[in-house]
Length: 380
Image 1 (cartoon, rainbow, N blue to C red):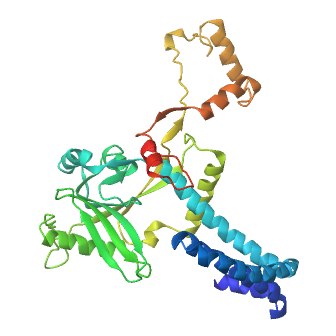
Image 2: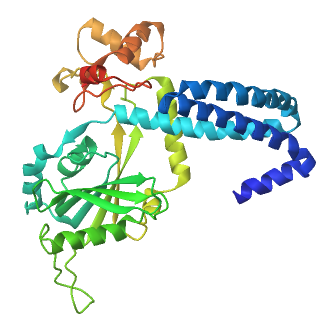
Image 3: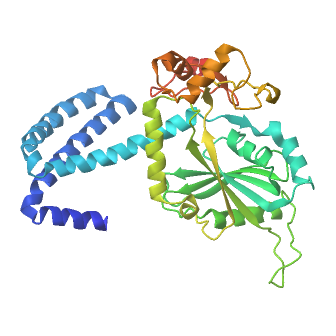
């Protein structure tokens, strides 16, 4: 904000030069406010009898102000338009990118994996990663988890821990809310926690989680995690924490169109500029594991490789002793034929348009319009 204010002052240099940008911004703000209030009255409150006269009266007055202010566009009003456009692009890209991520995500019922997780927590073949292993999730349901989290625990180098926590942060309209909801799935080692925090409350997860684990131990929902060694005279009943942060990245195999792919790339660029989740959630001094997972559910058709046996390779060179058509194909590759040549164009188009398999199950595609119940059932 400080840099932006200094930049505006240096750009306009005087209040007279700033009047054009300020005047256009004010008239556009008035017009948008009237449109929003009309939408609220007509759509939310269902009072067209009040909404229509309101928008006709105030809209006409503000429209006159707006059109008269358009003459100021080249005298400084362009700055307002450019700044508003930049903010709109960031908001649109973030919302659209998040929607595409959700359509590519698969959520699995946790109760189907409780036995595996219990077995892993007691499996001495794997070293204990931490007493408490914590994952952050965007999923607000109480009984499901993103497939990538379960894959990280069970498949991607199994992560043994005494207790697993899956935390979702939900912001409330009340600025000072500090609440939490726990689903323990009938176990003493698996917890999905929803933190309900006000929009003015600091989201320092480490501090809140320490309180939650202490209450679980106090209520006998979690066994004490006594440490044998400590610098303190009284050893804490709460063990160590390790936070596993998953970052989705766009994979070449993801079957999405070019526009959505550009939105995701721009969203991830903005995310890198904005900093690290470790700082957002107050985990700078915590033990953190970063994992990058590919974003794909629907994948493009897979190309199969043809194996050539070692015995079929000539002793004096690299050319396989195979039939003539195979030799011709190998010769084409050795000549570095352009992959976008006409001979391969049709196959390339078919590969991009065909989905051969769904990893982890089908998901609903992104639809900007609200679905009715029948459509939702069909998608499911």
